[in-house]
Length: 103
Image (cartoon, rainbow, N blue to C red; front, side, top):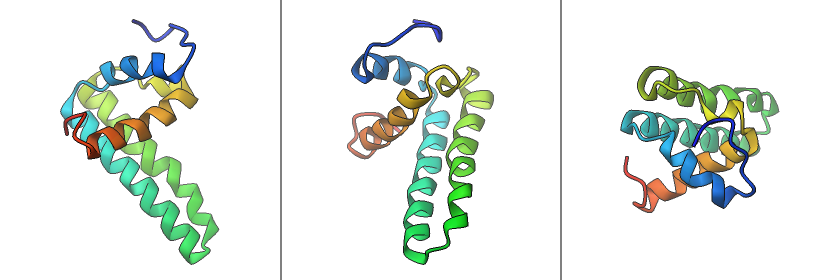
């Protein structure tokens, strides 16, 4: 599969997404970034400091893109498939917590 492929559903996209995250360090960095996104969102809602929402993309994408550019050595799927990639981040996070995807 390649980055220019069109996917008809997230179920069709997710195996491709996992292939693009075969490096364990990249997956761990995604996990850290997604954890920070969840924590920032919870803190923002709890504190009412809405400007913190601006930090969420930096927390999530910052760790993920470091993983791709320096460890996975590929281009993040976000550039071609932004919505499916965002869903993929949370699906992989869930699957890592469940032990279906290794750390």
